[in-house]
Image (cartoon, rainbow, N blue to C red; front, side):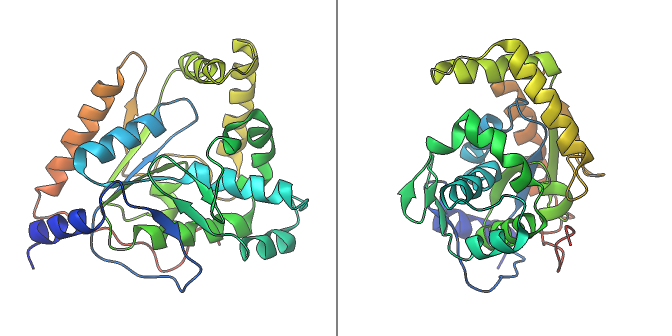
Length: 265
């Protein structure tokens, strides 16, 4: 089957409105579909850009940050020591994550609003740095992407989870601009926090993410670097869409396929 026809079939089967699920079954391998990764720090506009790009392309969208936040919430509810790797491994065995459009379900419960609080953000550091959590979620993310054309956003999508993705972006912005965006989001949710507090928290998180031994936040060698400072969302996505469509139409572009083993090991 020609690749264009195959992609059309996959797009029909896996529309952006379909539910993305992290099953507990054996890890799939895949060679079909196109993987687009968007990595970068908080406040760079990854989530908004990823959603809009997926919509324009007719691809699925995967918010990996929501997955880590969901695990954090589950661990806090179960009173699990966030640094106890054995306890976290047992907890992960009890979790079922579903990601229908715009929502996050934990064992069937809609936790979309619960995972965006400052409390979850503050507690997510040990979870993001956990070897067992990162390995397990990388496996889930590959399962979700199996056979799909999908846009994934995170911090290690192009370097660890999908190192052979067909198209990779690393999106960033001026630190103060990123803090202003995040500050606006928090105020819209009714949270009381100053811009300086957001900036300080952001700087600490950037240092932690960049210095992490496991899956540090760094651009992939073959990623396209894009600074969103001063650009509208439409401008950012237009640049990404142009590049993705160029690669979709290139006969030399190989289909994405993950490494046989996660690089986090």
